[in-house]
Length: 268
Image (cartoon, rainbow, N blue to C red; front, side):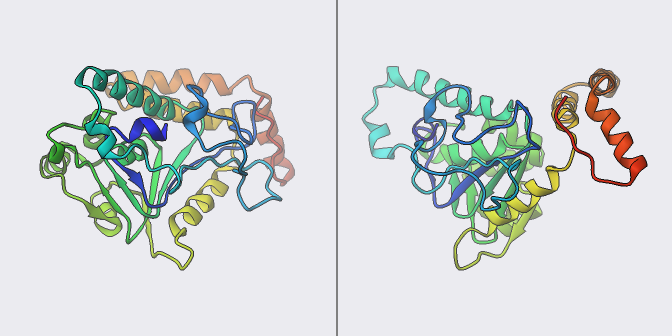
């Protein structure tokens, strides 16, 4: 993934992507790459679990400063006939990320430009340090965002403002990103340089207790519903709700409420 992103913009600083959900068969397990290739995440020689070892259900994946993408000098050497295929692969990989059946959180502690921001836009939630830098800067290179940026940014912050940022290739910090709705949370950077990552983990822990099937279909209902009119969206919600009715987890949730205890969901 990182190599593909480099053709569209540098992914550097400390940009981390966390994918987390309550443990189910669909949850990303330790060192499991996103479908589409082993390059999706760092090498298998590293540990990718969160620091919360006691929370075995928490699964985290991240791209960090070791995955900055291709050098733009290398991009300059690329033949024009190679560019289309290169960008298509990047777009497909980012779409894979957007379609993951678990909540995804992008934590931006450093800089996410071009493809880096496009990857973050494919996540459900974005968190950034106040000192972080973000932007779709492709027009400076006489190209346009090609891995979803022209589509996901307007859907996130509105058409007019998205046009302004893309036309100007402006870079915004965490505070401005929060004010325009590009990110959900902004935090002051800490000495370790991972404040956004810590905030993302805290959010992920809030998601963990919920029913896995419900989380999956809730994401599906929201994502599909946002692309259609309200009447169709309500029909999508009804169809997604129906998927939760026959599950064992729904019965477990009712029993847990009745017995005043925490539910023990299994994703069934």
